[in-house]
Amino acid sequence: MNNNEIDVLLIGGGIMSATLGVLLHQLNPNLRMTMVEKLSALALESSDAMNNAGTGHAGYCELNYTPQAADGSVAIDRALDINADFETSLQLWSSLVEMGALPAPEHFIRKTPHLSFVWDVDGSGDNLSFLKERHTKLQQHHLFKEMQFSDDFAQLKAWMPLMMQDRDAGTPMAATYVDHGADVDFGVITRHLVDYLKQQPNFSLLTDTSVKSMEKVKQPIEDKSWHIALTNKVSKRSQTVDAKFVFIGAGGGTLPLLQKANIEESLGYGGFPVSGQWLVCNNPGVIKQHSAKVYGKAAVGAPPMSMPHLDTRIIDGNPQLLFGPFAGFTTKFLKAGSKMDLPKSIQTDNVKAMLGVGKDNIGLTKYLIKEATQTHEQRMDALRSFLPQANSKDWQLEKAGQRVQVIKSCEENWGKLEFGTEIVSAKDGSLAALLGASPGASVSVKAMLDVIECCSTKQITQSDWQAKLKALMPAYGKSLVNDAELLNRVRKHTHTVLKLY
Image 1 (cartoon, helix red, strand yellow):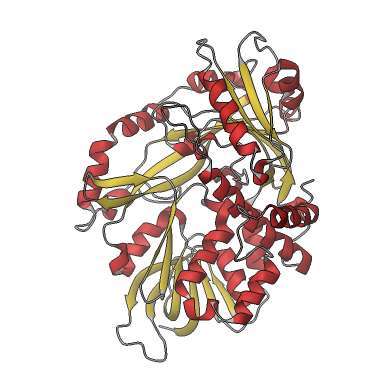
Image 2 (cartoon, rainbow, N blue to C red):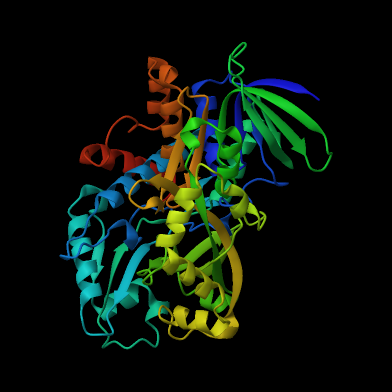
């Protein structure tokens, strides 16, 4: 056994841990940090380019962020918040590019228009009315002032020419368009951030390493708050780490690790796993004809993450065209996980919530099973609603990411299922964990700032920490939702540095 005394243990080698590590290093270069990753390399699960939306979720095209009420009104608050949070990510990435901690922006982010596209084949006009109302409300706000709307076939063809081929011009249809949307490769960002951390003398990376146990030291000796046992699956060697602060950012693997920590704040939490699949185009001639991210409305009963979209990607420098995601039913919490993940996660403190969610979401479970058992032609039919001329031979099915949606206890229905992200932290600030999914990676910077603020209150309120954060992110501590002048100034800088104009 080897004993290591460190300040920060980062569990999970994805975008969240990498972002938190860089932020903490910028705030205090003397912090001793270790990152632990269960797999042999970084960013192979949720942060991998094929395993997330890659949208740079900013609320421009994702229709579930602007729900419509029964009276036809559209709520935009969530879209505003997500857009502002993504701008926070852009600010940090810009600063890291300028200081050389990230490479030239074209390696990890590219300007790619974001569109929402709807049509009405039943003559009701409901979908077009919704999109028009959504545009009207969003475009009036400074965050979305450049969003365009059109129901003109010629304009739609100019925005997305491939999708308009062989489409009936008489069908009522409309789209919104934002030119400065982004395609983001979070796997590339993760690996470069960790490469930067590896250059620092106080950082170490342990891959192929699993957390076997976590024990809170009841009476910390020299601030040793957590005693963590680790095992390397290759060498079979074990070691222990004594850490003052632990962050669990392991995607779908976070819940089991949080349960190992057994903090009071984690009681009652459960998880509902959802898998995903893409149709991936293998015809270069088709791929080069589409350069946008086009989102539609989710099917009735589908989880919010299943909004169908035809998506241009640059993955490892190569153009890709994806359609989906198609949801699936699984009991795994990670792509590289075990079918026993879900059963093992059921404990006495969360069984009531799990049963409640299971009872109230039978329709969702049936939907996921139906999705998972579709034939190739059934999936192609869904694609043809976006791309009428799609040829089955040009598309193949590939696995996408694994997500674990948050289940929480509640009195009324025993438990409730949520589709956002949530930070669970120990009351003494010694541990934090990130549960949930969408919008996920796109708001990683804001999420990790929240971790710092809730777990490092004394430090974060010191003037030098505040100054350092403001130097990295000029809008830190201010509201881009409420301050149009600040938004214009910040966006002009970040879009110039990241080449999004």
